[in-house]
Length: 267
Ligand code: SAH
Image 1 (tube, rainbow, N blue to C red):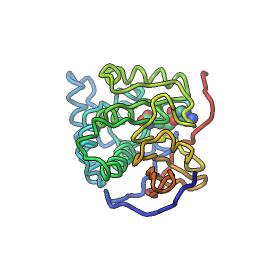
Image 2: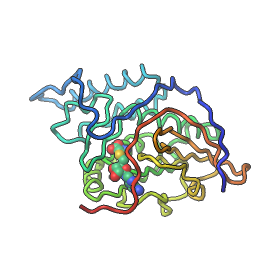
Image 3: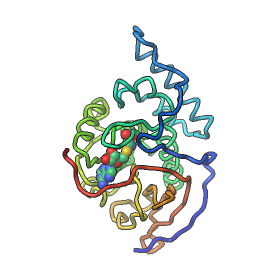
């Protein structure tokens, strides 16, 4: 199974260079807005902050309403430590423990937008609610929750047990809607039980594009993977059965994800 490289940029959004800070590298700023202390209605405060976040993402070139509505509906402060809640609606990756980070909202929005754009070349957009998605690297569960608001069925796997357990709690509401399933699993080779997928999102970076996952993706389906050793590019491979069942690859932004690791950690 080869990879046909068709490197190019799509024009779905202004492709801002997207640098997701690694754990510990993101704290040199003053939050513009803070959750009101002792607010009698924290939900309302978070709604206002979520709207501001959505406006900021729109200004950065995110145009897909499904994605913006999903970001606007998920309470990101529920996915971080209470000490970081005041920073939850900043467009930043934040530490979640075990040297991992919750995904930056722009990265979440950008990656979902890319996949929706690529998938809608083959399918009408109304079919989003039918799509079957895998995320490798559940972390806090935030991106999984946002994706479950966009797609039909989302499975997300995590290799660090305490993070998996935290994500289960964070995502309770979304799991109970039966649109999201989480597993304690090493997703390096995907997750065959839920295949075939319309899209697989890697939320941790790989050294090489995962061609071997072709069997777990439907024809026309997409694998999105931050790939590279020193410099990482966000790559999206589209499965094309007419190309000897290989991926046709598009390259997007320069990114900085935490690395994918092998095996399971229980701590
Ligand atoms: N999208 C997540 C953040 C992901 S951070 C969020 O919104 O919170 C990357 C995550 O990938 C980490 O939690 C890390 O433990 C996990 N990870 C790394 N390698 C993995 C593997 N082989 N299988 C499953 N998860 C993995």
